[in-house]
Amino acid sequence: MKPKIFERLKKELPKITTNVSLKNYTTFRIGGKAKYFFLAKTKKDLISALKIAKRLKLSFYILGGGSKLLVSDKGFDGLVIKVQNTEFKVQNYEIFIEAGFLLERLTKIAVDNNLTGIEWAAGIPGTVGGAIRGNAGAWKKSMADIIKEVEVFDLKSQKILTFSNKKCEFNYRTSIFKKNKNLVILSSKINLKRGSKRKSESQMKKYLDYRKEHHPLKFPTAGSIFENIYFNGKSKRGKQKIATGKIIGECGLAGKKIGNVKISEKHSNFIINLGDGKAKDVKKLIKLVKEKVKKKFGITLKEEIQEL
Image (cartoon, rainbow, N blue to C red; front, side, top):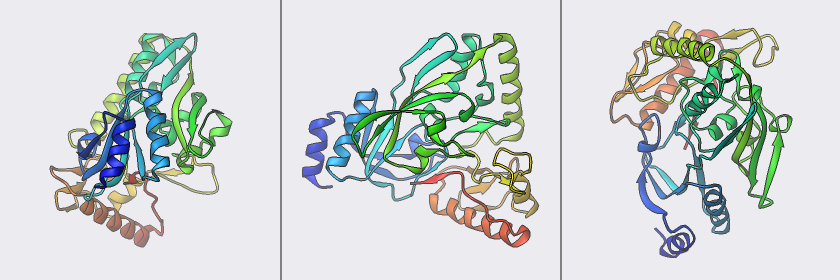
């Protein structure tokens, strides 16, 4: 650790810590330590951390809920900024929500206010900011359907900007924010419709029951490892879809284990951590799956998770 860098970080971010285990901040429960770690509890905290990281030319990573993330066993040699800004406000059919707010908690707030349109997110881990960045979705719905605008901090211009839904460039499991690291999500406005709390709760229960039945929820995972596959020139939200879990299963890989991680028998697009799993073994399983699927079906799988 370079003392001068830490001294400068400490001066502007008094609550910064060092050598923090990242596995405790991911749903996979895998990964090494962050050299520097900072909890950004407000929008001001987040912007301050980003500015000093840029001034010091320090590598940084914005950490949300820690889902869809595989942290290296070696950890991260830079600054990890854990987003925890959670202010929100409900006004008519809109919800103003900050990036660190949990997506699952947002579904409850919407339902409690008789708003509908986000029931599909029941049971999806992670923060609102992360969900926007990766255009999280389920049941043929996604964040793109409910986002009105997104407030971001542009590291390049050092300005706060507002992006309309169209400017977010949403597509299947991606957005402009995933493509451009300079754009860091601060907050957003969610646009919903007037609904019935009873009907919404009933719908959410169906989604949650489905997840309990079909997903390996008793083990730490990063969620779906690979994107689903779409054919025939359809848009990535079109009808020509093949579930990746199904073809991985058809390759006979369900239950395949390396080290303390294995492909779930319950859903083959999930890799589960059996306890003290290693990122290196997850990568081996990912490589094996891609090779087997390519050989059997001629399909090149694309990872949905991100590596750090």
